[in-house]
Image (cartoon, rainbow, N blue to C red):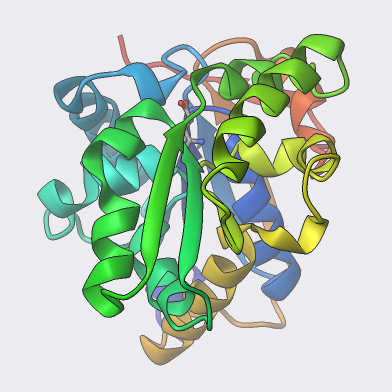
Length: 266
Ligand code: DGL
């Protein structure tokens, strides 16, 4: 095996959202070396400009480059929608966005009406709608931005009355469109699945993380980038602010054993 195969896989998001993807890939590939970066100082990404998002991503990618990663998972729909196309060929590692691979699968589903919950920046980009209709123009796509949901999740407030109210308001709007499936188009939203399923059956919701992890695993295999599977896996977490809060809020999906290290780029 070359040195590259045994290099780490980077993950990043504005905060705990990407943990929903990390947790899935780690289940499939437990022996890889993982480095996760949560940009908690700059969240929510969904309310930032394309220029800001590009600058954040470049800083994070340079950090991953210094760690000699073999691949980076953009475990963030917002940067997948707004930044991926601009930088996809600029780094010496494989880059995996979330939206583009998963919309191929979604557009093959036998449904005609799909709802998307996502951040304001993702909705403004219409990336989900464009990608789904590129593969299947007969599907109607209805996109709704849910700006308050990310902060609710970062604060670990999923079980509060105000979280229920925030979810109800958007579900009321969504259900008027009569969607057959609803995509959780922000990696933070699966944390709200219990509340969401008070308003529609659980299997209405698509969590792209599950599909994406499978696609990444297959692609790493195809590129001959999987490590020696007899190696012991490891993980390191970094955040740009509030490490304890990150550790606690992420625990719904994944138990992070030691407090993340602080890392920022200013
Ligand atoms: N979790 C990210 C996403 O999937 C970013 C959310 C945010 O910070 O607004 O879009």
